[in-house]
Image (cartoon, rainbow, N blue to C red; front, side, top):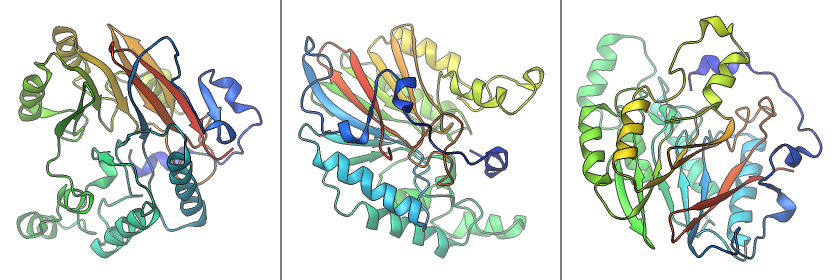
Length: 315
């Protein structure tokens, strides 16, 4: 989200017993999970969803991200893949390129002992533009620098394209670029998505910005006069069009996102939308509102159903 968001935030300490606020949450001491969440279901695979890491060179970030990877890799029944839905580094917007690359170096240093494959989608803070307000400088970088826009993200994350798909154990995963049309997909990506949705395989989509979520509304209500709040706010502006596609191609069962740094889960017309908060919570400056540092574990079942648990890893 925009840097100005952070100006609204206050530092706070995590309240004791916070897992009671989230019935499907576990604390760090319970993260070595040994069995499916629902014994009556046949699980296809378990995944982890981590988002809004906003990696920066400070002790809170470094120690916390190491803890996340240690927990995930130590689980007896650990996830087979990690979905990272963007804002991987603190911010590359209008930053010095060397600074942005150092943040990416830090990201890979922190994840060097991780053995679980990671699949990415880009966040708004993963876009690189030169540290300048000069239109000529920006146009020159656009024309000559391969790192411009999503170039840095694609090269450093070793991701072949801004959006893509892959399949694993009977599920299709579709990575979307929420910035294709700035909080929307745009025509080209939407047409590509339509072709991807024409499948008989259960699908899990992941995007940085939520498609359908209560979190953007509540985030705004906490900071603005409700009369001034306008749809869509910090969620996909093409939410209705996407909802219509999911209804038409009824194999979409799960949509994962971040961006808001809030946690919520919405089920609508047969699709579960999970906003998994933020690994960084309040951008590594304490806890954002009621939402401590977290990631999500998700079981994807062979019948298209899913179960999830939030892990407040810093407890």
